[in-house]
Image (cartoon, rainbow, N blue to C red; front, side, top):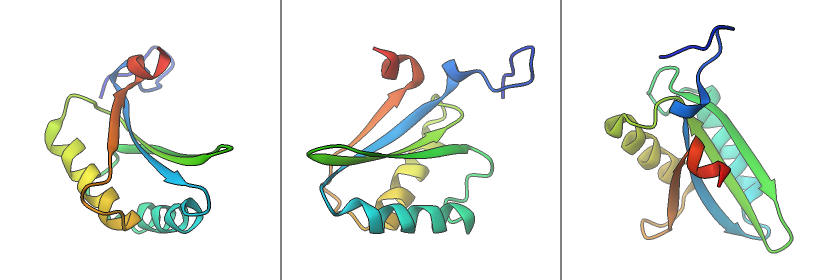
Length: 104
């Protein structure tokens, strides 16, 4: 893990999984996600560094941030656990964006 001079994780190394939901479906998924994070169901140590729910007019978005975008084993594990915890079908589109891609 690479830190800046203040001891914080460099955001340029971070990334997030993004799942979009029709209105009204995200609240239960959000609750399940929080319980899974507290219960350490992702089994990736301290790799997950945050989660966000964004309530929009036509859709809701859940994002899960991880520390190292380049670790494909960990990102795949997070994706698979996220899919299971949220209870979304296997064909649900899940986006993965690095911090820099998110800024564009």
